[in-house]
Image 1 (cartoon, rainbow, N blue to C red):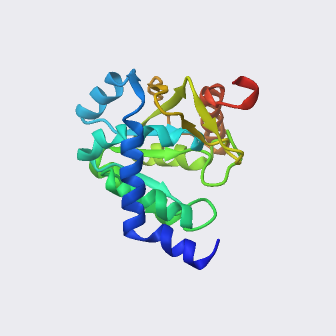
Image 2: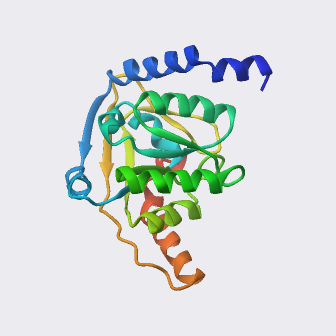
Length: 220
């Protein structure tokens, strides 16, 4: 990526343009939300919640997630040029980016998200980001949920018509006027693991719960 392109992506005006474009574009969706009440009730009653999604599907939720801005939720985002853009959009949505990933600055960013969730009650985690492999739940989500005593709430986005990029995650963007559904799964309560084996069992359970909701070519 050229220096000029990196500077453009990192610029405030470009990030503001992308944010406004996403909001405008998303108004074309026939959008519906399912199973939100349970975890929202848990949050409003003092519980903590970590929303989890595959990298493939987060785009379609950006506009709707503006509804949660009063909680100032925390979210880990990589220290890359693409991450600069995502962080700029997220902050304009009312979310609080913590910059880092498993390959760079991850521990510091994770501690920032943990602190933020303890304060506000709400955060989110992109499970297989920033570079995959697709459908692989990394340890961060489990670590964050355990450290904050948060329930994990998986969510999925489906569309009746969409484009799928030829990228590692088969990134999904619904087509204009598509019927788009944001569906929250049941809350997952975690017991503190006694050892690494039990931790891995928790991680694998989350992966097994969510893997069927990936939109892969053979499933379309």
